[in-house]
Image 1: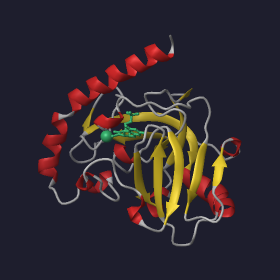
Image 2: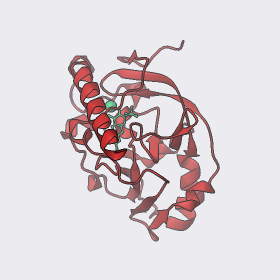
Image 3: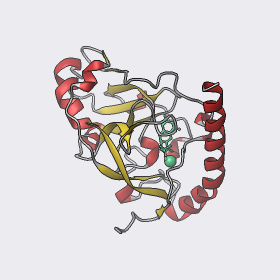
Length: 228
Ligand SMILES: Nc1nc2c(c(=O)[nH]1)N[C@H]1C(S)=C(S)[C@@H](COP(=O)(O)O)O[C@H]1N2
Ligand SMILES: [Mo]
């Protein structure tokens, strides 16, 4: 077994996880991949079938939540963000040269931003399957970002839009700003802005059990209603 990044602890399951205000919100459209590409761009585009023409890859990676849990060895598949950017975004959507801040928006209202340079790394994926199955509602149907080098909260699920902006103020994180590190690199333990990790780790650990419980309870209720 490899060693985990600093401050992380391995768990055996993959919980549905996230900020309290999104735990009772669910995607309307989960059947097939469909999202908007827009921002400071020449030609905004709705992507559906075009996604299926992009080259696919099947990486294994670890998911590191900023609250300190890590789930190792997740088998995703999908399209490398870099291939999506180079083969579809650059030639067709044509972002302005300095539009290098990328915002991801989920159908549940959650959102996050990352610098374009971080997203062009080899291991960043737009994933539509986990363990060989289409993504579940719990884990991001129909499409999610998988950026293993960045804390979980940057890995937006249920993607409905990917935006390329010049200005970082385009994305207001749905929690106090100091909890949104502009890069949130796991390897540099960029957990919060201006607060030390010795403080953030135990505070975050406290909220894991209640978040797990609430996320699961809301999901079960949603699936029962949906399947009735
Ligand atoms: N749309 C959306 N994406 C999201 C979240 C969310 O609540 N909504 N939670 C984030 C957080 S905090 C984490 S740790 C991971 C958890 O992914 P999982 O629920 O598949 O385990 O998703 C991230 N992406
Ligand atoms: Mo998280």
